[in-house]
Structures are given as structure tokens and as C-alpha cells.
Length: 103
Length: 222
Image: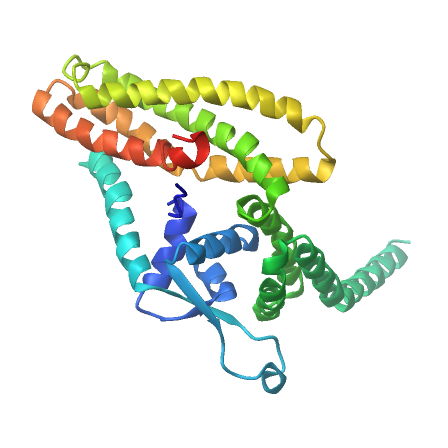
């Protein structure tokens, strides 16, 4: 049996938290990188991992790259499943540890 | 003499600055291309355009180069996780899993050691089973790690670089165990209160289970 669930690491949490913030519904890799301060070498494996697991979805921006005069951006957003599972993961992993450490 | 040196330094700095600015887009493009060429086939088309776009979005000459270099590191991780890359999949089974488990096991062992000092916990079946599972992981990890290192000696340098980069990254990602170490003193401090210990233990076991044994069926064929 293959388990497709992504590993929940601190970097993964940063990415999910950024995409789940109400400021912007969709973000490009560069925008996520700026917000999370993750290097491109760390960010893209996480994005691909989350997308493969169905936690994120992505699409190309609609505009024609010739009209834009630059390459198209790929925009990411959290799926409903991703939102639910991420919240459960945060709850399971972060809150109990915080409670033990600081209560 | 000092004036001439200063003038030459200024001229050289200006020249180098202009050269770097002029060449950096080409260098960044070449780095992106090199990274894309090493990707699994099914990823190439999409990530080529996406990464060019990423570099384009980043302001500043040096920042563009740093981002482009980062893509080379990303390729190592992406290849290691790609189910279609049979060659690299071998390294995942032989190297990534044992290293990860060995490190997890060591970190968890210190946490478990603190827990086991409390007599109320030793009788809990669940706690025992977690400890046993960790011990088994440690043994299997050591065996596999030893075999993996022997196998790695026959590998080419590029693949070894990928492997070490990936293992470094995995160790960095084990922040939860670092957090768990902060828990240890707190746990010892309040371990006289049996009720509280039991409640905390149940939660800790859940954390240990989820973090140490994330995909046992994947890795060990359980």
C-alpha cells in the first residue's frame, strides 16, 4: 500500500500557512518564496509534493505570455481537502507540543 | 601611487559590476536550463516555464542567480521523490529511509528515555509497543545504512552529491524532535503527578507514532 500523504515539516507548514492566509487566494512560486523566505531549492519539492497529494492545485495564469512580455506564472492554491488535512495536521503536531512546552 | 591604485580599483570595480550585470541573465538562464535537463521527463516542460517565470519575478541581479542555483538543489529532491525514476528510487530505499530513521530514532530515544523513567508508564502496552517499534527501526536502520554506504562507494560523484544534499535537508526538517527536546525537562519536572503524566504520555505517543513511523508500509514492507 502506498501512502501518498506528504510529510509535515516546518517548511511545509510555512507554505501551507502562507497559502491559507486570507490575504491572497492564489500565489506564484516566487510570491510564496518571498512570503515564506524559503529557498527555491526547498520550496519547489514541497509544492510538488503537496500537489501530488491533492492538498494544492495549480494552473497557469490566463494571459498570453506574448502579450505579457514574460513567461507565464503558475499559480497555487490550497484545495478543500488540503485545507482540512492541513488544519488537522497543525492541530495534531503543533498544539500538543506547545502545550507541553509552555503550559 | 595611491591615487593611481584608487583609480584602477574604481575602474575595475565598475567594469566587473557591468560585466556581472550584463552576463547574469544568461548565467541564470543557463542554470535554469541545466536544472531542467536533470529533471524527470514528465516534469521538464512545466517546471522549465515555471522556473523561468520565477527568476523573472525576482528583482536584483544576484538574487536571480541565487534562485537559479537553488533550482539545482531542488532537482535532487524532486528526482529522489519521483516514483518514475527507478534509478533514484533505489537511493530512496537504500539511503533516505535508513538515514532518516536512524536520526529519528536517536532523537526519539532521548524523549522515550525521559518517559520511561516514570514507573507509571512502563506498564502501558501502547508505550511498550512504541518503544519496541523504535528499537526495531534502529536495528534495521543500522543494517541498511551500513549496506547503503557500501553501495554508495560505487556511485558517481553527482549522485553522491544529490544524496548528501537530500539527507541534510531531511535532518533539518526534523524540527519536531528538536521541539520535543524542550519538552523533556518539563516532563521530568511534573512526572510526580500520575494523572498528568498519563495524559501527556498518550499525547506524546501519538506524536511519536505519527512522526517516527510516517509510512512504515512504504519503507519496510509492513
